[in-house]
Amino acid sequence: QVQLVESGGGLVQAGGSLRLSCVASVRGIRTYAMGWFRQAPGNEREFVATISAAGGATSYADSVKGRFTVSRDNTKSTVYLQMNSLKPDDTADYYCAADSLYGGSTSPQCLADWGQGTQVTVSS
Image 1 (cartoon, rainbow, N blue to C red):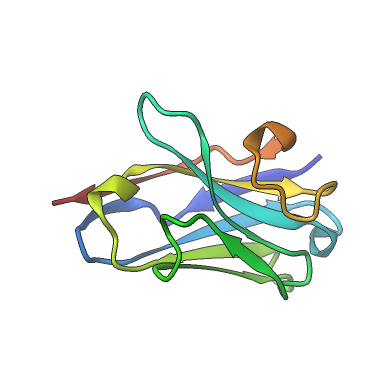
Image 2 (image 1 turned 30 degrees about the vertical axis):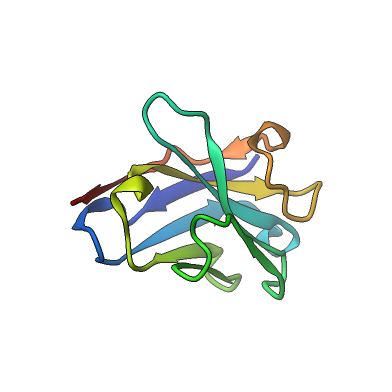
């Protein structure tokens, strides 16, 4: 069973930066693609970014392209989401997910292993 723990959220002013981390407790994490998703109050969970198992391929939602960067360190079983130029619309709970089947699914309905989330609030 995969256990995921996110951290790094907080309150930041618009234009600021945060780096989220997701530590995975599972053998063979280097065989999992990993994804970041977010959910704002009253909204459905939405795709933010994915990274392939080896880290060579990434994908981003249009709303975060050029501002967010996903990376991973398999030696530390950790995935990161560097968020720059934050906007109030980025305010949400951010979740990481492990993907052992799809190689980087952008659909949260396809994924079963989730962390508890970390809250990001961007003030204007």
